[in-house]
Length: 250
Image 1: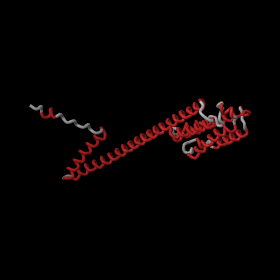
Image 2: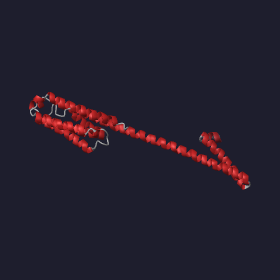
Image 3: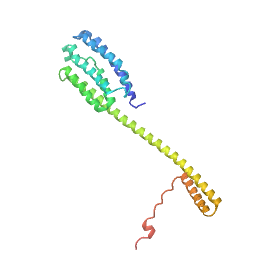
Image 4: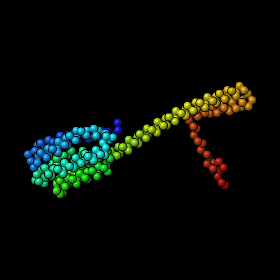
């Protein structure tokens, strides 16, 4: 399982829970909306969209750029529509937008999929939409925008680091597997060479003459190779210092 898979699972749960929260929040303040039917229509679309796209946020492969763009469009549309269906007094007082904290799920999707750069751009776009809906700068709006921006960028950065670590680990495992395979092949080759040398020694001894000398040399190489395979290469001899070898100059 990918190291980021738990994040996709958490995002799926977050979207479902915040969808329920947004609908509950609207139901609680239903009588205070200027156009409650318009707000209810949007939330119905939001609920259907969230339920139909559960699979799209279940993994990085299914979460495409097209889906992320559509998801962000749904969130921003709800933010801007809030200024239309709600009363000016509630908007000025900092009342919740229609999608409420569900919007953060759209931003987090960009963060998990594309890293901190995607998260920074997307959260900035959402921040602008919130400022437009509010009609200007307000302390609570700026606070919420900065909170989403920092959280999404941090999560995006963590995802990028996790991906790099995962690739590094996979590469290390590949190198280890390749090293083991080379060692196995080397042992097989050594065994084959030893068998050939032993056969040359035996046949040379049987034939005699120059073949016997060749067999003797093959036997010496067989012994040397067996020693090398069993004990590893001998340490390199360190040459003696010139002063020790030739004496100090007079």
